[in-house]
Image (cartoon, rainbow, N blue to C red):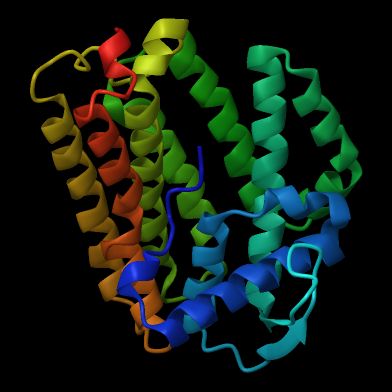
Length: 283
């Protein structure tokens, strides 16, 4: 479900994109060093965004920059940024990925997902013990989401609100004066992510008889416009909270993501459907 909170490279200065990549590579490196080489697949754009956001907000003094080669880029060294918030983001990536894999195992009985989850299960329990509040939020999210799906609840606020509450807890790094704004950011961004995913999958979910809160309106003529309006409301509230934070460093990167990058997938999906190559034509 995650993966929509991405940067729009075409609208970003070269130096800012290089900084974004340095955070992305930093998160990748910390996932490997903290959680094992096999955890490279845990890397997400969403937690890269969170690492940059928290690093900017708290003006990390112990930021380190290094140049590394890696398996993906063996011929040249890449700039890598490390902060304590990258470590936090890597831990959240691990917790979320474990529960997503186990959830897929329960829903689909996919043994590959089960084996992947089991491969870092010990490390999951070690990390989860460090973050009782976040662990509780993730477990609550999974349990309540199953209830929404079982009831086939078509209220958009049901499942999306659960995702919002989950991300709200993950965005709050510590209890301080910025907690409320971070929580609001996480809540509405989480709702946006869930609804964007539902929008992308709606016709495939209809074929497979899977739960999707957009199914009841998917065949309406103004479906795309209604979805866009709903998603705009989510991001407006998210950005409103963001603009209340004293963000200076990396502000151009963060605004690029919030005001442009998150919409790239929507534009791609809509274009594909308009061209007649999407899922809608087969329904």
